[in-house]
Amino acid sequence: MTRIRLSCLVLTSLVAALVGGAVAGHAAPAPDVLRLATTTSTADSGLLQAILPTFEKICGCRVDVIAVGTGQALEIGRRGDADVVLVHGRKAEEQFVAERHARDRHDVMYNDFVIVGPVDDPAKIGTLAQAREALTAIARAQAPFVSRGDKSGTHTAELGVWAGAKISPSGPWYRSLGQGMGETLMVAREQKAYTLTDRGTWLSMRDKLQGLRVLVGGRTLAENRDASLRNPYGVMAVSPDTHPGVQFALATQFVDWLLSAETQRAIGEFGVKRFGQPLFYPDSDETKTTRDVTVKVGARSRTFPLAELRTMPKATLANYDVTGVKIGPIAPRTWTGVALKDLLLAADSGVADTRHANDRIVVTSSDGWTATIWWAELFASVPRGAALYNVKGCNECHGVEGEGSAPAGKRPAPSLAGRTWPVERMVTILRTGREAHGGLNGYTDAQLSRVDVEALVGWLSKPSRSAKGDGYKAPVGREVVLLAYERDGRLMGGREGLLQLVVGPDQFAGRYSHWVRTIEVVPPGR
Image (cartoon, rainbow, N blue to C red):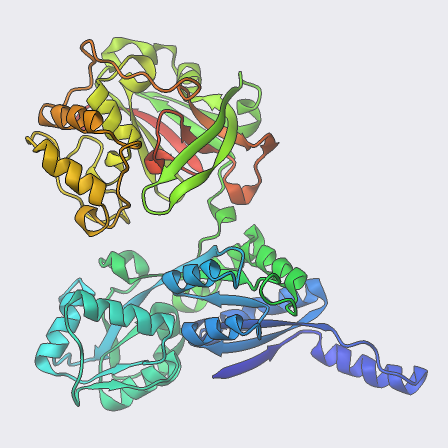
């Protein structure tokens, strides 16, 4: 465990106490102390030493940093021995919140994991792109591998890769250390062994690790072809509901500061001058916020600032009650903004012409997420089966046209279109859910009736976007698709996205999208 005290005020406070005691006969009050439990990578990389003095100056406090593995940091939080936790283990963080040790979790930043090893690469993994393939080759060769073995976020990620490769590593070639990342890298150098490390710690220690090189993951995050190696960090203020003794107000101030645009900028700049790349990439909602949207229709392009959107006719979706396919019901909200149809017409009045009948409307957010709406959903009518495919969330994983091209970050899903699916089999899969349906919750009869499944299966066998007497009608009050800037009667703040796509007819949140940046009308074939 590494314990660091970081404060630009410590020396000043000490001097003030001595002088004050001599002059006034008593010591000046000690500054408040914020206890930060965090992972070793934030300390070993030098990030905390670079950014925390700014916060201490702002708050007039001292930050005590306890740098351990993610698992240990969360246990410290569970005991109430930390006020705030900054770690990288998404499932464990969500469990921490579910256990009421924190009220919520916030994205802070990310980097990625890489596999490093001896320059001569005895297991010959240097040409492999996927971590699973690399660990399989290492196990097959029984080449030395050192693991942190400390229940940290990195250790958890490593175990996940082994599990994905269906290997339980054991034997003299595999050594579990129970140490931090820095120590593990030094042992790997000494023993000419392979290990999994976060890129930030690797870059900060690279000069001390002669004989090792990155073998899987590339020179930069952009070159890393294994999406499973992405490494997100989250921050959580420990809840006073469960732990009344914590410094919750100070912890909340720290969280707000850490997620602010200024601090996120400092995080993104850290390491660039020395290493030619960031050690961490900012990822708070504040950094994703958009305050204007660009609409493209053919050769026409027009950007609408938020202020202009607010002058356009308002559209409202009251009590918008939607379900997340994995997390279940989402709290009903009332959204206000500009109707997407009105926005498109303001950009190009010709967009309503039937020559666009086969076009798609692609909405892209600043975090890279895309949502697709068929032209006919706004300007005409679509078949019942086609509408059900969208409003029930099938498109989120199975692709815009049922082609099976899942969006980035989603589990690969099979192609559905152009095939005849037995209704009974489809009903069983959808009702059962979970492992039978890619880990999703099962659909109830109220959410998707047998009649709905029959319409869906019928459409999938012969997909079409044009309605022929069976056009879908959205529930009353849910017809509009809008770009929202108000939620529950108040303007949204930066963390909440400012511009959010809300698709009224949808009953599942497959096309709900934060931080909209561009809206483009895309012809077939693009």
